Length: 501
Image (tube, rainbow, N blue to C red; front, side, top):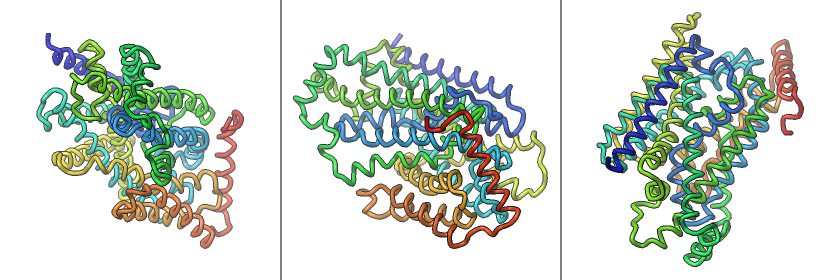
């Protein structure tokens, strides 16, 4: 059998595994709470691995190693910023968001939580938040489809459209029927596959090269600054790279995992597991880029097709074709885990946050689940149509969307959880200012110097606080109810000890 045949067998087995997990989840999904939040029954390890896998797309296995290969350790500041942001997110946001969303009328989506938190009877905040989610995530999903098509085209010479449709169809099936639980359980399997690949490739390559010392000596001989965390970067560039961590507080597909935990107290265990996974995977990606730099320099007979392919080519050199196929599946896992999570969030925005407002009448659980599945299908179809144009700059929107979500939702999520005086007007203005700032800044030349997330986050935070203070909530029964919920959520979040312990 050819090497390509072994690799195709490995990827086929991976696809079958994802579909079986989706079927398992389908059998355990009966109402909308199950479909959108898995009945708030996620164990800490499941929530942690799911959040990590849905967070890290193909960038982790291809983009980051490629950047380290080309430029050196200075490119690791994005990973450092993400690690810090993820730790803060698990430590402070996770337990409070889990408790508060249950206290605030058992909110199962971010838009519904924000509306219930500030008692926005106009529905402006909920509708606006849903529109932001739909706009950014539709393009986010399409970028994943594009990556899948390019992956099959470059790895197996399969036509772009065929590869894209295959990955889109399989992801759609297990997400459509399995809902949040299906997306979450497949995330766990995909996260473990990514972990195994990102740990094994650099370790085996280092052994092949004669040990860590030999690798360091070779990298230093080729470029003395390649292992320097500062050299080659500017202050603004380093700050902008590290500032990616700010985006975590507002990413709907990540923080929704916090809402699905069994209890606020389990956030601490989930943080330990999640941060361990993230340290190993980002460390493996960084190491792969640096080790690959040394390996291909010492093997001039080998040609690296593209810096972002360093992880893939090292796996094919070091492992049996079947194992290399599993590594290739890890790249698909990174793409598909992110896409499935985004499909669920956009579906919830369509059904739970927009349809229920328009319908203005009670809807049965069976119908809501059916509508949720229809929402997944609609978003996937639109994203697929956008992805047909593979020459578009959709992939560039990933960083833009991360900034958009971080600035639009990050400040108001933090304020809603930790500042009692946030008002509906303050939340709406903060969300609009964050979104508009990112959009305008991202179109200006200065965005190449300062990442648009930084001004977007800062101005949104200031706007929300200023407007809330200028237009305070009137005293009365509603204000007392909001204050009581705030106190109850804080108490529930810290019930099992300090949340930052």
